[in-house]
Length: 429
Image 1 (cartoon, rainbow, N blue to C red):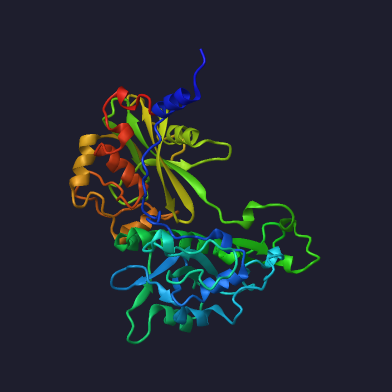
Image 2 (image 1 turned 180 degrees about the vertical axis):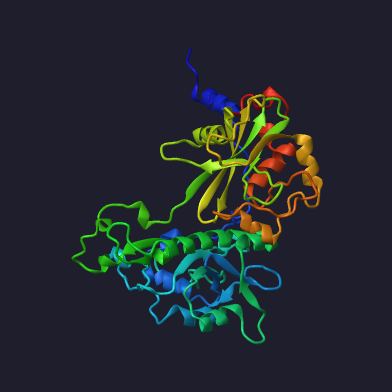
């Protein structure tokens, strides 16, 4: 029987669940207009840098500069930051856009500087930045350009300028996770892209092809071997396309595994985490692996549980240092025996009922992690021997996608998991 294209399309539309449009913390909401096609142009980057409304967010060893009183991110004006960037020109000249190793390039050893984009969250569509590829007097009249600088290697005098002088509001470099509870969605998004790019530039100071020093191109979005400045360079990085020349993003699968009756969720904890903290299981995707297969593999390796159907929920940038959390739900038989001895990553894993999660979510301290406890989530943290919480267990806050997955499932606000039992996912997985 011949099936018309229209009927085939309708059948596919009914059978495949496409998911809601979730905007998790660190996603921007709305994001910056990154104008990635401006990064290769020295002239355009210079125009953005010298914009009278330009704003700068500073980092020191990965910590953002924040207000000492409110912990909100401090955005610094051009007049304060410009003297720290060294003498002009701030980018190497490539006015003809023909010399690839000079496109939007900083001098070797210059203070790291990254062009993040333009803040247009309060701008009507008709007034947004012109989509031009060359300098233009009307390119951007009223929207701040946003930059990130790495202040890690600045001297005491320069750092004192950033942290505030006499008569100014005090500023300080503080832990991002501990301060993020004070941030709005937009500034969290700026922090995420700024920290990830600053971290990438600071980690990669030598060429992976030959070991020579590298320098920044494309307004902080590309690195080049310094031998490229020598016409006789024989570095292999100057031939072909190489993944170490561009920022990396590491995908991490994080999953809420739901029992077949729809009433329990599998969660685990690592030994170093704050006392009583449980979260969704998670792990990195490996080469040659789909997201769905990564979910199944990680859950099997960490807890010995075989996962059946897998469904995508949403994603979240996680700038510690440059991960993309890929949130999923999956189905599994809760009668399986949990095993923690396969890769020894978890201290404990267990099934929690919807009633248990709702009770914790209703408790004022159920998703609270204090500033001291944030350090226990850092790689290499020692086991937490702090006092046990007064409540049975704790869950991540909604600033982490694990908290979103757990909360949305418990409150039945996820469309594909709104019903109970095996029929809840029929036609949607």
